[in-house]
Length: 484
Image (cartoon, rainbow, N blue to C red; front, top):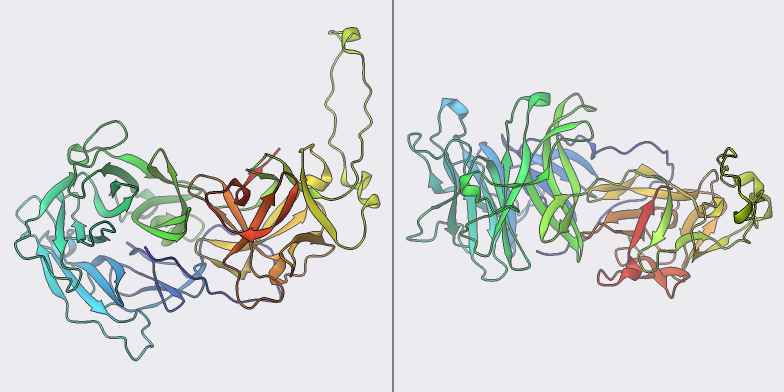
């Protein structure tokens, strides 16, 4: 899958508020896998139309797809976009006589002079009598063979697999559909490291806050299955390992899509049937996609807080380069301790006990042992008005209780400045990697044009933080957030 370039913009006047979900108007049901086209992101939903985003964080309506129907998917193949969708079926209009259709477009931008969908062609159908419902299709272009596959189906019968021609979008001549799963719908196929994965949406839909949708997965060494879950159950007999369920006041995740941003940086998209904080509406969701023992699962969106920022390389903590201030403590020789004497909790060292010794201007940063000290605790706050990236807003990172902000410099170093101003070099993109660690990336680097998509907070040797090109295969690029 092609890597994604990021487009955003700089806002000078910023405020800080919790960032709980995609912002704007991210209202959609049955979203397609997110597609990038000419610097913007698109996803299409049931009923026609869909959403557009300039940066992957703020979404609004405006995507156009004719034909209505349900649960489309879209994929770029060569220099064109192939859309597949279900017409009728799924009980729409009272029946299960569905049709799967495909169509092409040179662009997804409805304002482009090249925007024109081709006439839709039928590639599969169901007659309403058999145990199958031709609806909820998805696409997989096999990176190992170049063959194009589509899966489709609902609870009313089986999930089926067919092969399409990647040049025409038509059904391969002579191809016979194959049943590969039951007890799910809205499936998606993906390939990773020698495994094919079938992700299905399980549970009940279309009932708002009462919907029980969740996403499950099985895997196979062959695209044609069998798809087996983590305890050996075949998805054709109802198996499936959980990928994501309800949480964070959102219910009914369904319609999985995978987007690869960079090596080791992946996100999954879906909708929630109901977001309790957004009037119970069906909304687009973008979550980190993590992998453990070759199984996918949804990560948690990073929301900020106060943390130790810990290097994966050595386990040292990011801190200000200031003098260590000892804490006074009444101590007893260990052989003289009275076990009957009451114990008491010692308070942490306070900011006011040490801040008077710090320089007033810039203070560099370093890495050292974590000791619960004020110069080692960072408050990280989302700044959604500063734009964002696929799945998250930019963040400010300041020493707890101060405005002293982590800042990128023109010579690819990191320092702290006395005040947070909202400058791009003080805004940070924080993404969870597929192994559960994080990369921390400045929005921009002074003196360089455009958004930064290469340099990350990086540990060299054991005690020196800097900015360097992202390398997923090096622990120098990776960080953890500990709330001690």
